Length: 117
Image 1 (cartoon, rainbow, N blue to C red):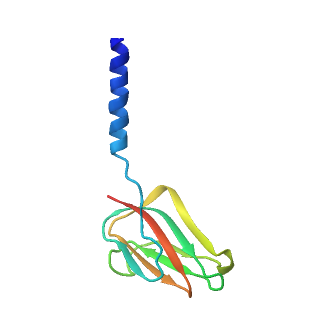
Image 2: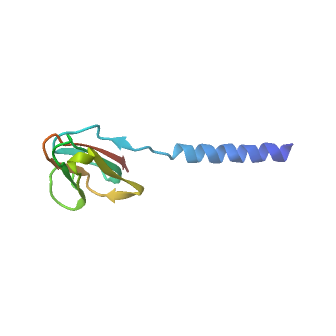
Image 3: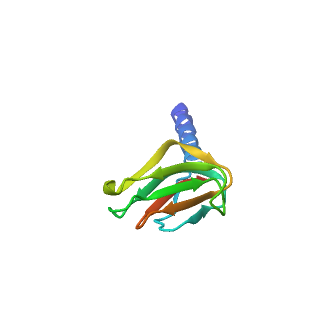
């Protein structure tokens, strides 16, 4: 019985330790204009691009906290008739300076999901 109590205690401590370290992704919410999404370093987990059904939306995501310059993390154009496109990373891509998104196309919108350090 004593061994069972020790094993259960170890399992409980292990489960608690792993649960405390979990951090879920944050979302930008749906955006329709160029924007600084975060000024902290972190990991990009997913991008969703939405069209109005008639115009091809294009986004460029930069590793930059305040401007559309620097390292391009991803550039993506979605065919208007698809209405929706994107990418999610099984192993999130790291960024160091923040995320800035440049969007173009009539009726274009996007959502960025990320984890900050």
